[in-house]
Image (cartoon, rainbow, N blue to C red; front, side):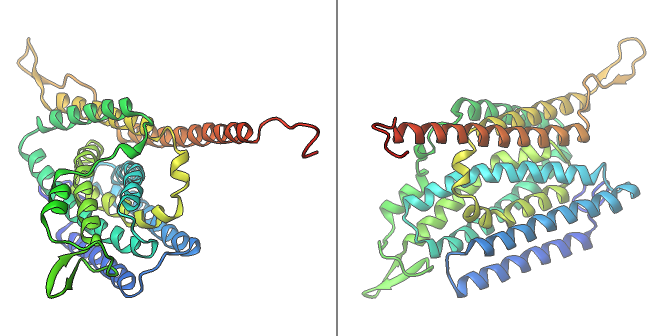
Length: 352
């Protein structure tokens, strides 16, 4: 499949316009944050998050209404929504790690927006590279779906095994540890600068290590997310835009529901089920693509069923809804039980 023609939604012009708009939004965001580093208010992040979510929904509806009737791509609207919801749910899970990183480096709240924004830019660049590589591999080798599927099944098993274990077990990767030991650095914060000079010597600031940690962490996250979304759509344009919209509102989501994240106690299990489902879908698709010769007539037959996109979308929405409701319900009961234990039984009529 060519990146710009064939069954893809996007022509070269659409790709160009999309990339220009994406870069423009990121530059405006970076310039605004860079000019005035601050901790955003709840009203500010709510407005921005509503804008990005509304934009993603509008984009998907446009694909559903205008692209699908012309046969530009197989079910582009449902494919986009399935991919966007999957990437968004994976991004929410990643926020746990971002919170830990911010706490570990003791990043002042007013600088966290800048660090997250730079991390998002790095994530988009790395995912764009993975998308191109993935599209080229799929175009040349249909058996790559076996690799993607098996990898997602392994990731799902690992995620289910970890379950709701304490996220504080996160450890820095080797690159960050090497940089902290070998590179000349200062422990003092110098605003959002990555480098500074002290006594004529160029030093790395704590912000540099934060950005490096976020960037390398995003690289690991992309290893899960890109194979997952290629299990829902083979169109690189839909893969790219789903990732863009999922990452665009991530910074606002970080500040808006930081406390709520601790209540999503079953999120890992829900994501594990989703990744396992998509992994099975990829393996079945690979089996479907690799036809077997029919014994009698010499014809070729597809020996595995294809999971339709409408079923994938229903499974994704249903899983996320059940996970959220179950998590919030159980965590609320646990909080009430803990509060009752702390309060203890009343004695001598106190508190009546």
